[in-house]
Length: 499
Image (cartoon, rainbow, N blue to C red; front, side, top):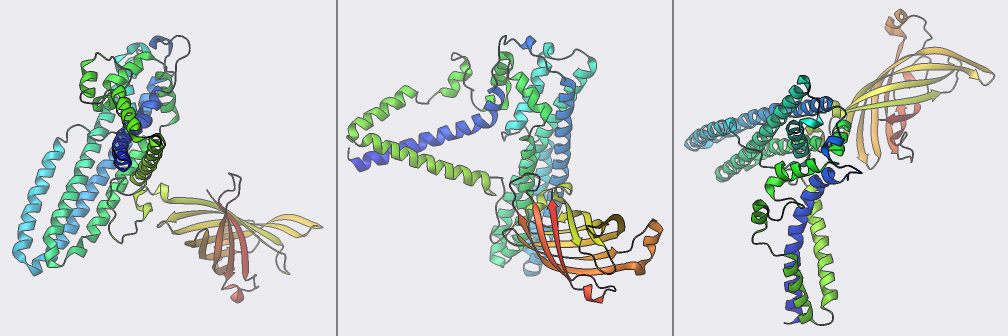
């Protein structure tokens, strides 16, 4: 065998084997290790390790499952409604060009949506493996099947039953969502083929965006299941110390239904069936040794280099699958820049902040510091709008005359637009009450409020401390300072912090 042919065959062989191992290891590390990672110390019997609060654990799992299930239901229905509305607009435009083609597509659309509704009534079992959901669901089934681990109180059993019912409802909703996503994808392809000859392909751009955001939203909900709460982590940690749980997980989890987990009975028919047709380790080693011997003195070194190259390619493929939109289940439309904030909830898009600004003493005012709070809303990945309020604290007129006093209030609105890196264009409109007050009724006098129009630049400074990691420095120009009486300083320097 020539060296070139030998290396080529080794590359193909090793790439195939590495790909198989990569898929198995990916599943194993994401789902099996969190469950089996903890080893028991001392007595390993199930009766020796009791959950401190199975009722609270069941309540936490039920609350999470119900929350995600309800959000999925609303988002899926909204996605279908938006798709129908957009498709109706496209067919309306098509009817002006070819009424018969539009009529045919409309009839087909109604039939397909009717089929979808029938399918959603009985979506079947969840076909996609979600490690976090598998662990939670299997742990609840385990607790229900092993009464010695939980209290025999009726309320505890009811909570477990309720949690199991809600996780099953979540599985159904997840399968419905996958069915809807696949349906919309197929429907889009059908419309694309039908509309290409009429020059209406660009009309599908909005449909592509809707489908992308829907797929990304599903990915966000699944990510929630990967982030267990403290009580969930503690429960799985305790359960993992028992052989009874390990055996139960091997036989009853969704992962076990995909392929037999290691450590089971080799004589188990299910184990033997799952390994049928696969080469044993000894067979693979003998094949490699035979080819190395035939390849000459440098064959082993070439083999190692090929393995390293294959591993690098697999790592690149892994990163691409996990980080790309297609890895999350969404197809990126051509020329489309997604707004990642659209898949987040209203609360997740809020940005909280605090800031401080000081002014030197003048003939009219003492040294003052504006201490404020702000609340921003992320329009997209680069733009934030918000409001804020500040309290003006007076310090006196110098080190020899320090006297704390109330010097007014400030109300502000602002916008930040990211330029490049950590730099942003910042601006806003403010109203400042610069008079000492003792009663809130004094603030009703609108003529005492001064206006400020600010524009400038800000920069996020990355400090090493966690507390001030998002410190912002703002340099602003007050365009309305020259109209104020008494005149205030036109250049404003602020220090802010977002959290």
